[in-house]
Length: 94
Image (cartoon, rainbow, N blue to C red; front, side, top):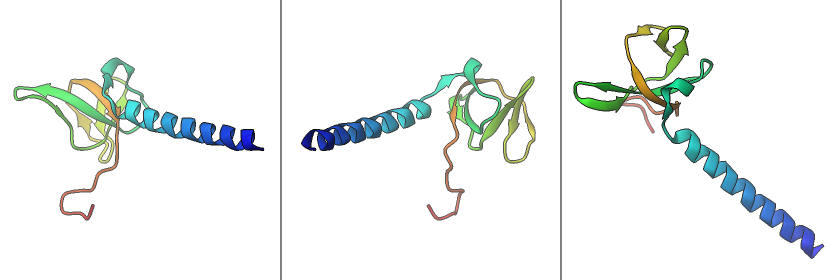
């Protein structure tokens, strides 16, 4: 009985570690060549002011990118991506 409780405790700890590790990995920037076609993602782009992230979710389509909310085609050349994390809008309660 005591061994079962210890094993459950270890499994639970491993599960929590794995979950936080996966969240951390998904929040890291990935090479743009690996961007999925079926997910809302955040794009990092380079412009004359340097690198920055777009402030709205994007979707990869054949031949380019669209704003995931408006479906408007984007004229961007992103360098990296990560999964979009919902954020409160300006003026909205956090």
